[in-house]
Image 1: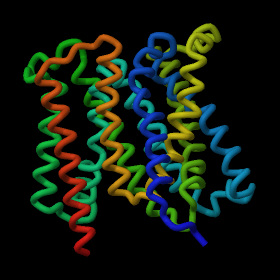
Image 2: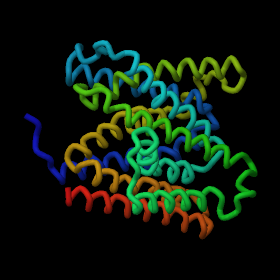
Image 3: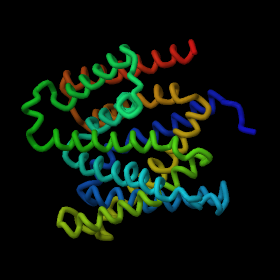
Image 4: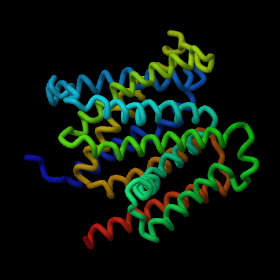
Length: 306
């Protein structure tokens, strides 16, 4: 029998996720000069997948590592979610700022609503559409600083667009989870991570052959060994487990509401590291967070009525 939801336990789990995920973009941005985006994504999931496989084997047994006739869909969603997300986001991060990446990734809830509308015909309520427009407007203010033409300088807008594509890839991966009924969240994660990690190796090899990436040296890997340890244990394993158990004990709405703290923390980390923000950037970020919180509270109200 499954244990009853425990709000305090759920809060502890989701706080763990926030602490694991909030430093991700600032740390990754500063690791990219040593290991390029392709190498960073590959190394991140090389170690993270090994930890996940060990964990699944210990908790659910060796039989849980079988695909049971679902290898093709698991591989497809793993390549979309794991390979696509890592390649697009890390390459994009090389051309943009950590706080931009974080605020764009926070759009996943509106992006899911849009995806469900396009694929299933379930049109969001007018209030939800208003929140989506407001959130997108806030992101526009953050990435352009109110100067759309100036945003093209230095490739920053290209980086933001790649991060957005990475967020869309993760939304597709999230929605695809409903196709794997009977698999635990841990098993789904592991059996999609395996083909996703293989996809990262292939993408890395293609990028090296094309001359757009380089094989990282042992010296470069050693220079970011603590960052790699953080990526594999915190962002890949502990962050995902914290999120899954947070949903279990708090419910998806409360969990997503708490995750709105991640981009706030990223702005705080960058400010602590000496980054200065224009007023319009902070206004845009506040607009995004306010729109996401308003949408969450609206969804909570609808759920309570139902």
